[in-house]
Image (cartoon, rainbow over all chains, first blue to last red; front, side, top):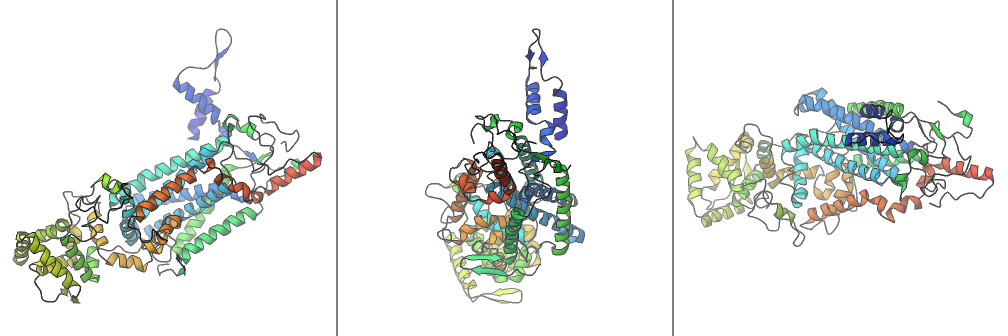
Length: 242
Length: 51
Length: 334
């Protein structure tokens, strides 16, 4: 992702605009060029991977986002092994059961840190200053993760799966969607859990990170120096200047 | 871990000690993250910056 | 909140000291530490894997429950027989959930058709009747009897099962006028015990089978599966959605979803599922749109948890303001 963006930026950077006959600057026409300019403007690599952060980013609460990603990494890695070895493997092999245990605890840690991240961002009101969409995508990730975990529980092929399917069918049937999202259909749930939901969650997480990185870290609540369009970013001279 | 979990039953609340432990652990971890000092940030003296 | 999209990140950070922060190193360390955490948890605590129930294990462990369920399937009174959509169109009674005229369960119709009497009893029996003249005769007698006669047998036999005793491999009912039902149900029990029923319920027109709707709905109609779930405290009225077999943590994140089922009126409402789904849907949307909802979005300003998170920064603001001896800007003005 970032390599593509870097390539686009590099391609775009030397000629963001070309001099016209009158010596003025005109932008290259076309949709492709417009998208490239937009990406280069919104997501230059120095913005996506900054090596400095504002001084107020100084609390362990900020770490819960990255630990959530770390847990997702190992959940997907162990899930990939489980998918490769086939659905029956982990019931009969000690190594398989261990990989399943990694998957189980990876998912538990993913939810644990995702909820801590949510708590942190709530108490910091991190949706301020134009970040409402970042918060909304985070909530969608939470909901998508619940669907992912639910379908995962349904395809364990053990008593747990049987009972969860039998117990959960009524809620989904009540909405009328039971015929299309049939929790009793193992094949359907398997495809959704192993293929569809990991792609959905991963893409949403990438989008979420891009949102965070392009907008930057929200300033502390009540920071009297927070720039606004009205003040044009003016701040009292000398204060905390780097 | 395969033996049945003990459950806490208070009024209409019924929770396994495993889930209770997990939730208490989350609360503790959140409190620690709020309180524990974070290293290498906020330098009053700019010459103290580290790279 | 308004217009801030027009500010670039550079402008937004203006006046704030920027300090080195190695994001990639942080990610690498977090990933490494998390690997150790999940490996240790997996090695020490393992993971739950309570063996699945089969129709065979059900028929062996609880033969009377199994036969009673099979009889109810034939009579059309079992859960799977009288569920309504998406399984069958003929029953749209009390089991179908609706809020007044709002009845999406009916609107979407039948997509997983189950014909209980045929799928669970008559078809499996006729598939196994070749070579069993007694069973073939019983099936013929049942099929050629009038509906009233069938109902009469079924009612009498169902009542008799309430007084039945189990000895060895057989379910014994008191003498009565049950027509061919005892022969049919003995054969059903035999199919269950032998494991043949597990295969018969999955065999359709296809070689590959991944759809367990039929056998799971059969088990859902009996009391055996639910009895096991009750032991594990996984039933709906036991906060079951967040519980797990053994001593493992379950889907604790479903605490609010399962909470509603523990309190009136959802505790007893026949359309509780539909109402709870709607409540949770609305709450999810509220959470998503929280930044736009006055009052809710102000809670973090009122409850000063942020004072802990940014305590160094707030001290710095106060210090700088004091050193400039100007009027200190209020850090809580919002």
